[in-house]
Amino acid sequence: MNFIKNPRAIEENSMEMIYPFIKDLDLTAEEITVYSRMIHAAGDVDYGHLIQTSRGAVAAGIEALRRGCNIYCDVTMVQTGINKRALSVLGGKVFCRIADPDVAKRAKEKNVSRSMEAMNSFGSDLNGSIIAVGNAPTALFEAIRMTKEEGITPALIVGIPVGFVGAAESKETLIRESTVPYITVRGTKGGSPIVASVINALLYNLVRRDNMLYVAGMKD
Image (cartoon, rainbow, N blue to C red; front, side):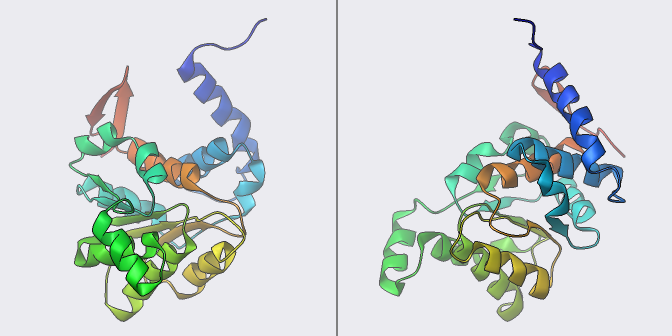
């Protein structure tokens, strides 16, 4: 059987196949990388018309990463999917507290989800960060609340929880009420791989990949 075997060739061919589905969306070059990787991660070209971003959100995320911002996740699946070697070149780290015993204890006492309590526990550390929510609508609702009621100012919220209970509603709330830049996907679609693809796309606008060696300064 004849098929493409080289990983870079597979990736480049995939991006070429995806481009016709987003070429009419009036995107910047950086936004094209984000949209393309989201569609690639989902295997679903319908994403092109479901992705919703605030004005300048992709640029805000890239600039935050350039400054070495940290990333705070709702679940370990998001944390695992982010290219931490590329992130470390820029000085950032990824954090997730859903498995923290203290978080689990407080969540049980409050009768809320662990991901919601974990997000709350980050507090002011979220300022200037990227919040990455790929599973739990409760974590996204909490992040939105913290920006509105506690004055938390992340550089970007990537809020794309997946599912049927609260997921679409949390994303519509983000679109309607967010006071900070955001990237999301309308409806029930989404998930940790999609969120990780967003973060990695932002990173690849800043670092160069040479045989798994990551070098900063890809773009001025």
